[in-house]
Image 1 (cartoon, helix red, strand yellow):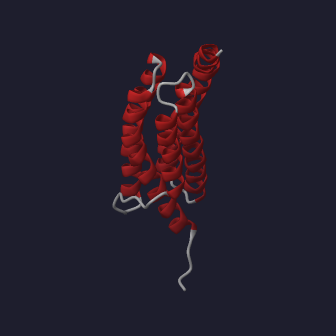
Image 2: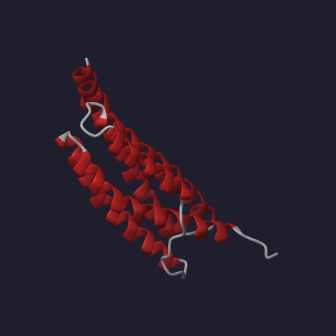
Image 3: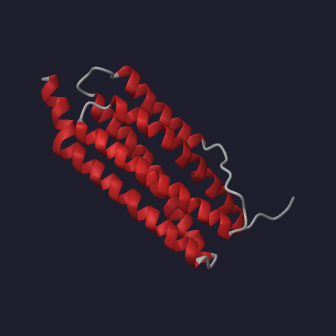
Length: 166
């Protein structure tokens, strides 16, 4: 059996997050359409635009390592997105819908933050300075999105769901 290296692991994980980002691009418009809160809709739309940039950066990294941009099925993102779709279906028309959608979006963000943090560390280890910069930029955007979602949850969405339920 051939020896697998950190380079191989980096490439496989890059393929994983590439698949995930492209899947997220398709899921965000559905989430935006389903949301009741205009602020939550706007957050989903803003993140969709950022995600397009994330895909472009990943394509640049594939080019840097001499590989074609190809994803591999990411079971983790499949499951997280499926949970979001269940929330959309099961909570449609209820006061808790936006809180559920926001929580699903944060599950996506936390997965992305984990992957990008790992890839950045491995890129540093492998001496890929240009890739490190691109991954750092995306990691920063993902972290800011997560924080913005937390603020939205704590300031409006969770409270609105609770007040309407009372």
